[in-house]
Image 1 (tube, rainbow, N blue to C red):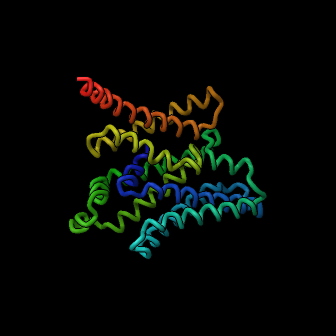
Image 2 (image 1 turned 60 degrees about the horizontal axis):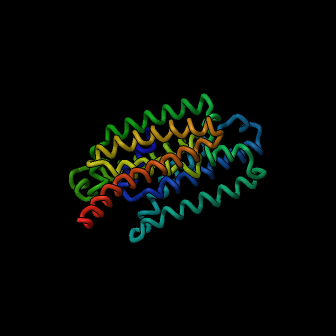
Image 3 (image 1 turned 135 degrees about the vertical axis):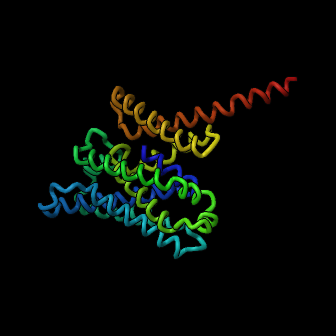
Length: 264
């Protein structure tokens, strides 16, 4: 629910790649947790996901800082953070004795590995994100389409945007266990892309993206179970297939009409 909930605002604000950058930064955080587990016994029972969440939040705030520094080229902040996240993750993983089963679960997702504590963390985070979006639905909508008008209207643009990207960071951190670091951005953007193809309004796109995400997750889990495949990858493939079908469904009648008119 919450991945496309924040994903639609990312897409509208042309910040889709931010999800990729923060997910890769989460890799550095998780790798830090695994490295601490390998060095000190006190961290043996500490979930690396918590550190990944912290890295993701700090990274989101850092992206905003870089966007202000590079005012003329704000989009450059995203690849900078992404590169740092990947590089840091690789170095820390190698320091923690290489790629192992634990890191593979984080990279590609493993819904069966979700612990009771992670389920509680996901539930609480989802509740916070849903409440945030419901409370600030109109200001977020205004900021997506006309930031200048929103500022003139008295909307605290900077603070709402900062809180929003923190929500994005939280969603990424908790979604990692379902689809993995490498695919988490797809869960935030592909349902939105599908919904935008058929929606007639922002509200329809908003609701449709959530429904398409649910369809893909449930269908993906069913296929993954019966075919014995990685759930994260199957969920994303379902989304891509649905997107292609929707695009084809829109273009096919149009092509038929063109052929019919030419024939006449």
